[in-house]
Length: 368
Image 1 (cartoon, rainbow, N blue to C red):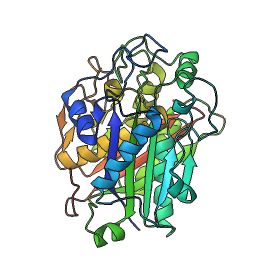
Image 2 (tube, rainbow, N blue to C red; image 1 turned 60 degrees about the vertical axis):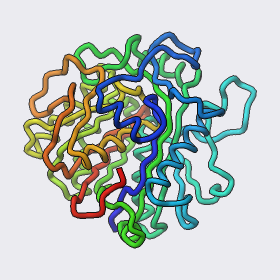
Image 3 (tube, helix red, strand yellow; image 1 turned 135 degrees about the vertical axis):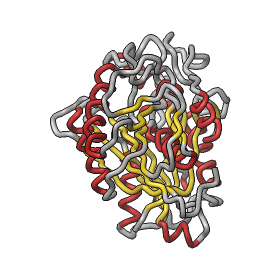
Image 4 (cartoon, helix red, strand yellow; image 1 turned 30 degrees about the horizontal axis):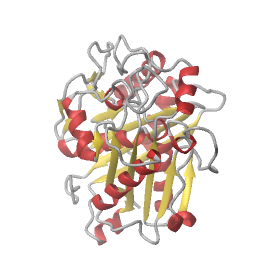
């Protein structure tokens, strides 16, 4: 049973909406700048520019979820659907400062019994999509909504600073001068349905989640193991019974070791696919690393690249690493009739995920 993407929603440092994100990404610009609301650092961050209310984490989730449902042509989460929330698990309100911008948010009361929570570090949203596809393929439901949000907060920022992952300048994925990540905030949501359900109600069904690999590497805590990354992408391709890639929207946070490990892995995968100039890009130099929800902007970028035939530039990339079979993207790149894109997502604790999205130009297209 094919699982298709019928709705997308996003809040990012470029603003509210998928359109704001895509236009900002296509421009090659960056929303990373000195913090205005967040007081925990002098380093560049990706802040949502709009005041959507407090707590910010819930506000970002609510706006992204609402946009995804409208995009899918739904008035709300269907009665037989599952909601998968990715990120820090909800917890009792505490007296610690900014606690509600760190934990949760919990599901709305009306959806509580139909909600699952998944936490797999910075690969959480990718694992959520994998869980959603399995729920649909098993016949448990025909519709799953995966959603999450992150807000800049002192706890997660301190944890990234403690492991020396944060760059003093804006992140530069795949650049020779990269020095670490920039942390961002926002929210995202994706509506997934069986192709049969989508067809029955006339919903978009041109992009499918054709292949998934979610893997936790035993005994390897880092998020930068080239063998595990390579295995994940290979297994996602095998799961989709595909031997072609037109684009990779990479995890690529801008750390020296993480980006290098991903390049090594993708070089090998490109060789298997017979690619000599496989386009590879990242959004994290534009909006920062959204931590648990970082895969949702990646999925959005990959879906729109498949639909438009245009790979967006990687902001911050001015001096690309040398590659043999990959084409890193400091500028926009047209791709002729793309049909397959991979989205990679990796996290501490050796949480590794790769998704293979395919587009059928003959199927009903998206609303964007």
